[in-house]
Image (cartoon, rainbow, N blue to C red; front, side, top):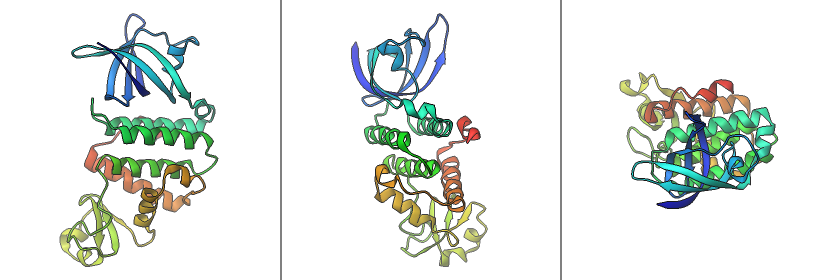
Length: 248
């Protein structure tokens, strides 16, 4: 049957006979793989909609076990991201991270809207791009129900101040529990005493990305938050070997 959906191209792979396989984050169907014979080059409305950082509408032929993109049109092109090397690299990383979190054919409309908002803010961002990416990842984890425990100790369940973050336990650890041998020997502990990481994450959660346009973490704090998110995602979501991360 023929259907249509708004979408964002996550990735594309060239196949035989001038065809391509498009990994599309669609508003209606979630993450889907769709073949297409639309040419990569040219300035037709369909070919333009298959370029990176483009929000488009896609006409699909939905078969029993596959999709095909018959035509496409641009709804909004965030072309300025591609004109800046840093923005392009960070944008590519966010697309790859998002791809790894999404499950096949499971709609995630709130995340879809968040990704559009991220593109809008990234296009105009002049500094602190890494901070914007960390805020996006934090919100993504919340939307997908994967957020670590930030309100109470992941070991005892009490709402005490965080002394550390345990990647293994999936949340903050209070000072009392830090004295337990099984906790103190946890190799995944990340200290929360030097940097108030939890406060930063909660600030990200409390504010839309557009309100964070003038916020930029200092280098040490940024690296601490990045370490937490990266190790948490690797341990609990098996998100490793992100190719674009090596270019940042």
